[in-house]
Amino acid sequence: MVNPDQCPAYSSFFGVMGATSAMVFTALGAAYGTARAGVGISAAAVLKPEAIMKSVIPVIMAGIIAIYGLVVAVLIQGRIDEKYSLQAGFLHLGAGLSIGLSGLGAGVAIGIVGDAGVRGNAQQPRLYVGMILILIFAEVLAIYGLIVSLLMTVRNAIQC
Picture (tube, one colour):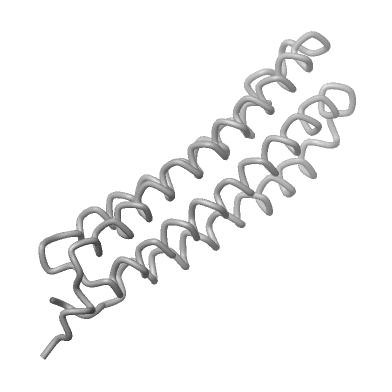
């Protein structure tokens, strides 16, 4: 028998906030990363216009972060129903915050590295491989958050 205190009417609020956090924070990280790297691409294009397409990698990597948040938000909202427990709400809030905040951090890192990297690459093309490696290490921070979020999202909670 399930205790009624484990399934209050406001349980779904925490799940919805988890889905919202996942989407909002990853979108903020992606937007910042895209904007910051875009500024660097614009500045580098003045020196080397032929390298613009090669310099778009940071923008693409920043945009992928928002997709991670979207995946988790869709998974969370798909599990919210009438039999939603407080435990499930807390798990989903934690999942949303996990991907959201790690995506925000990764987006900021990608923006900073992308800006400096494409500017440096315009002056010294040998910096390109190093820039890509640093961008990968920044992106993997969001992937760590995604893994934790997925584990928390698919975990079975008390059913009401």
